[in-house]
Length: 182
Image (cartoon, rainbow, N blue to C red; front, top):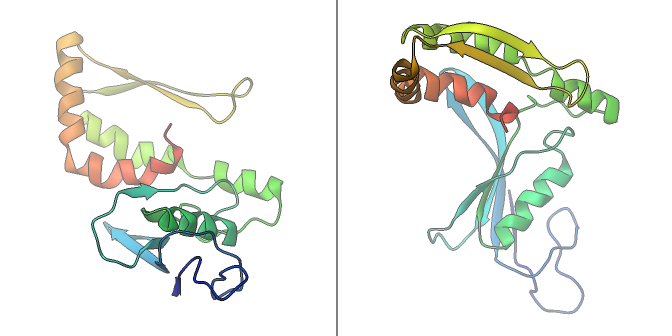
């Protein structure tokens, strides 16, 4: 855990515990944290102002590099600006050595298993069937399109509302694919 006060005087730039220069702003605390949902633990990095006042929150998703030092520093910068900032490690601790490994790790998140294990059974409870599953080979890469079959427009409206309220959908499926959604 690091606690830093930017602009603390004494000449020179303020520095954190790792010796990196920090910008002016709030006094913050930063630490590794995590959360568990249905037996799946997700590591994360949290930074917040130390004053304990209610603050707006922001979730920062890392790029293909994972939860690197740079991502942690970005999280700290948001905290210095007055936010409670959280960077989840959706790549499961992987720190790719280069761009190619980073793209592979990011694109290997298993959306197919999430749909087969969760989305299809949850939607089936409300009479929705998977009619098509497509992914791109050319054009904008790494897109998956699902086509779901409904009886009619009334069923579409009713079933979408039911799925949106389903605890398995909101508590299991959405958290599992959150890093993949636009």
